[in-house]
Image (cartoon, rainbow, N blue to C red; front, side, top):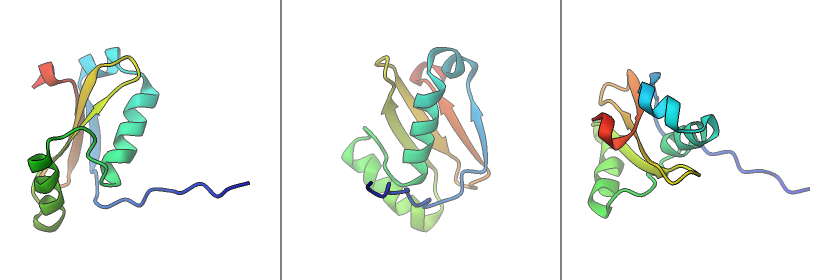
Length: 95
């Protein structure tokens, strides 16, 4: 039996919100996996400059933005505000 690695949280998420559109079109498992990856510092499919901005945000307290793809192929975003008071799961068209 191998030990499962548990991701380490790199920052606070605050209250977690989701757009109604994301809730209706994404599986709960995809949302939960995305949140876990986001908080562990796995930014998903962001561009290199956004990856670097997220790494800086861990030090400076700026907004953090991750991009993931659900099992059904839908792209979704997870955004943690600079204040670390809230995190939102949304689809790009919800912006």
